[in-house]
Image 1 (cartoon, rainbow, N blue to C red):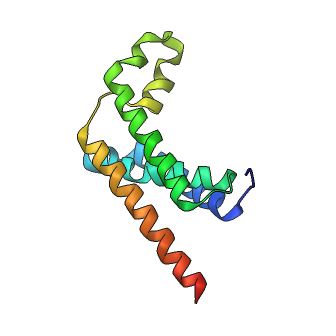
Image 2 (image 1 turned 30 degrees about the horizontal axis):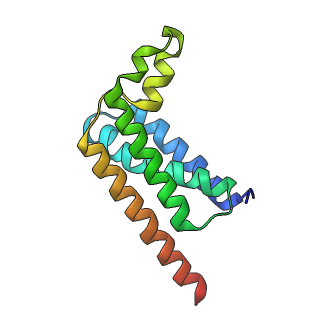
Length: 125
């Protein structure tokens, strides 16, 4: 089940750089919506770079992780940890719940599934 995949890891690193760029140099819609859209691809490629599982399972896990993290924002969890961890938790968990984030995650996962299916069809030819 654990098997390193160089292609997905390369995509993971590229998406990491994109996410860092978005976080440092953008605001508004790009940061809050496009960043969330790419965040699911970031998580997905990380999962696929480590585990040899189907695209569907990886997409489902990614979807669940993104939704769990978003709903954890309703719990105000980041404010119940020591101050030295507050910044890291705000980066991981975010700071406020948003339906728009859930939409961005959903569209991101749908895009992942469509891209994977398209790539699989191209390989079959």
